[in-house]
Image 1 (tube, rainbow, N blue to C red):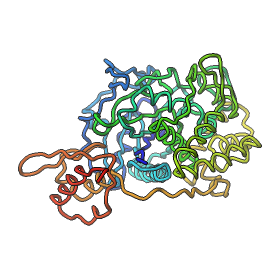
Image 2: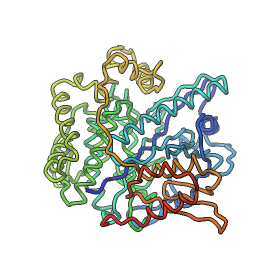
Image 3: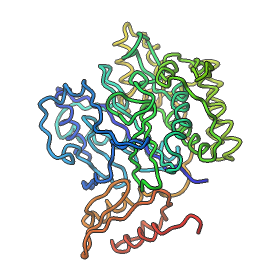
Length: 482
């Protein structure tokens, strides 16, 4: 079965002593530049197309959050590349300033377990950067892996999945939207209070408050459950990058692994026409209801006056995976079955595997006297510093189950990008997810990095740039039927 190349882009929250929202973009830019490791600053923006829509049109412009606009007033901007401070790391990752938040985009991975480990490595890179920034500025620096500042602003944790172009919008929307709604009950990061709708002491998702529409291409405002941005990061004639913005930033690797696995399963089932269909009447309302119910059996309204639950959606999906996808996702199916039983019996039995359960436990144990006090605890749960963060305190107490799933073998195109950044930086003119562009005597040469090719480990034995270029060209001629 064809593997689904995947990645996670996490915008982190930063709190810098003596600094505030008015300097957020400038601070984030300098934060990224403080990364102490090797980097290549040649990001290629030519293939980025955030206004292209999967439904076959192009937006005139993207909506802008009016809350953010207040902080940008009077901001003097340089070149886009200078403001973003894009860094390509030697592991193939991208690290940059995304509108006032340092964003770490993982190297591509073949499977959820591999991606989960890459995501955890991103936390370490942010921690190293925070320590370097604090040392150079003298400012106390804290980094949070979360999705809200509790003052109306939300920042994303986006997932990417490479899908065949022939699936198209209609099939992907029908297959994936029910999963994005249902998985909230098991993979939400948890949130004290609410920033939309009726007041509530706690809910399972950080992002649900910010959903406005069922589907659109926006990411900063009017956020959808299903994002329709058509920016494939590969040859657009053959590939769609399913751009998921509806997920939470997870501290617990089990939650990351499960949320990615569920989307991969939906894509694989849809490829063979076996994904169960649930026509959710109002995905925005359904996501908010699942987030606020603290139960996996909250009613989700379907078209035609019918209804279902998060458990029913996941049960039928994983049942289809067991029947039609062989043993590829057997560990996910077994994990979810055990987790479902524990959550139904007593949510505290899932503290070791589910972020919202662990966060709820920490908050209720502290008995905060107000929602703002609970939100302060919520924030510290997401602090990535092992010496300060409450998630890490649970981990050190043995309350978090060690993450054990092993990644599938094989190197992705990220290995090519990272190797070139480390060994041939003087020969590169530009680099991005999709390609590497080299400077040669006869002119520049842009070489596609195919997302469906497994990179041979022998790549690490190449010492000269011309041999490396020749290897890239050979990989591009690979035929999966050979």
